[in-house]
Length: 249
Image (cartoon, rainbow, N blue to C red; front, side):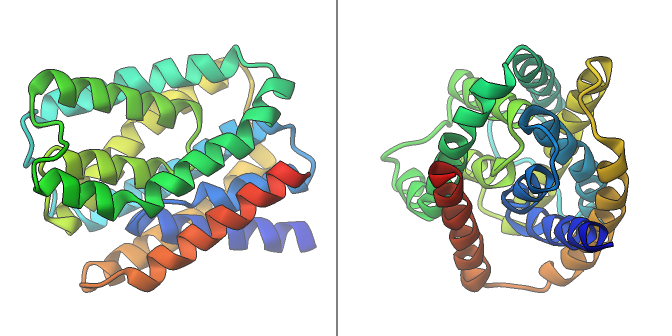
C-alpha cells in the first residue's frame, strides 16, 4: 500500500512538472528504482508512464501551439519520431550496469541545462548563439529527441532550451509544442521498448493514470501563469538532490 501511494504521488507530480517545464523523471525514475525495478527497465517504465501526461498536456495547450522557427511542423514531428526510435534502440543495447553509471551524469546534464536555459535564451536573443539555420535546427532537434528516447529525464527542459535557440518566444506555445514532440517520440520509444520487454506494467499503469491527472490539471492552471521562477527553482532543487543521491549511492 505504501509503495502504491508513493507510485501514484510520483506519477501525479511527474505529470505536473512535465506539463509546465519538464523534470518529472527526476521524481519517477528514483521511485521506480527504489521499489526494486532494474535501472534500464525503470527508465523505460518512466518514459512509458509519462506518455499519457504528455498527450493530456497537448490537449490543454492545443490552441497555443505555434511554429516560430525555421522548420515546419511536419518536419519537426518527423525529426521527433526519428530521434525517439534512435534513443530507444540505444537504451536497449545499453547494459544495466553501464546505464546505472550513466544515470547521475544524465541527471547532472539535464539539471545544468535547465538551470542555464534562461541564459542560453538571452544569448540566442542577442545573436551570440542560435540555431536559426535549417541544418543547425535539424541537428539540434535530432540530438535532443534522441536524448529523449534514451533518457526521458529533463527532456522538456532541454527541448524548451532548443526551441528558444531557434527563435521561439511564446512560452505557452513552446510548452504545447514541447509536449507534442515529447508525446510522439516517447510513444515510439515505448513501442520499441515493448519489443524488448523492458516495461514494468504493474508500476507503469497506476503511475500513468496519476500522470494524466497531474498533467491536465496543471496545464490548465499553467496557461494562466506569467512567471515560473518558483517552479524553476523547485525543479532545479529536485534535479540537484537526485543527482547527488545517485552519485553517492
